[in-house]
Image (cartoon, rainbow, N blue to C red; front, side, top):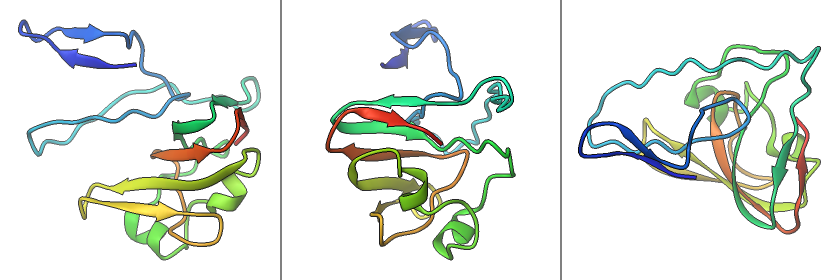
Length: 135
């Protein structure tokens, strides 16, 4: 799904709603903070599951405990967030990539290497078969 700003500054494309069940790539030509208001999952009534296809999937990290998102430094130190092996355990996957906006670099993550992954972030995950991510 894609949405872009048209000539009249209105959104055009196939995204009709932004929600916590998807990850989003936002590209801008300006260095401006972007804030969003996304409804949070209520784990007591709505257990999150995210369908994935074989191949690349952009998926969010859903934290059912709803703790504060970690900083990139905390993820790199593996002191906060989740290990990729634990979070993606319901999938058959080989590699994930996260983008560090502060360093403007991609981080390669496997089940045994790389930074932890953190809530409030999205990751490109290569799934070798279709399945369902169960946070």
